[in-house]
Length: 237
Image 1 (tube, rainbow, N blue to C red):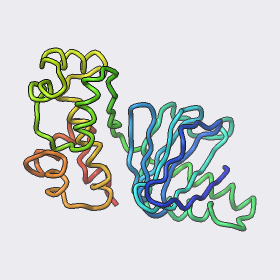
Image 2 (cartoon, rainbow, N blue to C red; image 1 turned 90 degrees about the horizontal axis):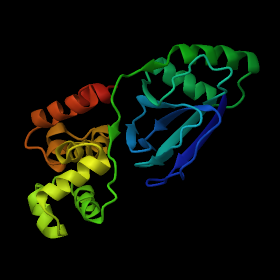
Image 3 (cartoon, rainbow, N blue to C red; image 1 turned 90 degrees about the vertical axis):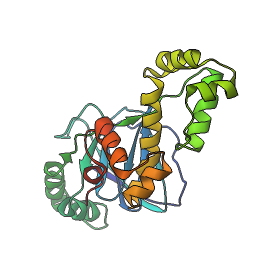
């Protein structure tokens, strides 16, 4: 393994890049986000993301964060998941990662610790939240409005009057360019906007209201349908 430690101020983002090695993205303190294509993940210290070699991505800090990059040679790694996967960071794995990113670990001890760390990589089966961007400038205006305020209650008919397109025209644009109906796309926008609040421990009722849901139960149901687990399971300690 190769290791990297970075103390990141809030709002810091690395540019888009890829690695010849597999990477485990983990924050020892604070919350980081990872984007790959149209998909996104938010990672408190109880979660990490396995990023396979050669996958283009970028990583950023939502607040002040202690980012840890753990890199594994694909030829030597016992783990070879072909796509990004979220993993659970339980206390033992956390201690091992802190140990491995410290100074002065003897080579033999490092090899033993690395072997245990690989054994402890426990995938969490979640569907990444995907928010494709449309190319049509009218749909881009709708996108900008909802990214700025995910709780905006307007439908396509109301948006259409503001951007100069009919409701059906906008609906076709979202299906064609985002590969999903507008309602599904809006849900993804809302869920992605909710992730940083959830990672910080904001109460569910508050999160639901901020992203456009009338109740915590409605938000939890939408999250589970889209992601495959509840918010509590996604960010469990």
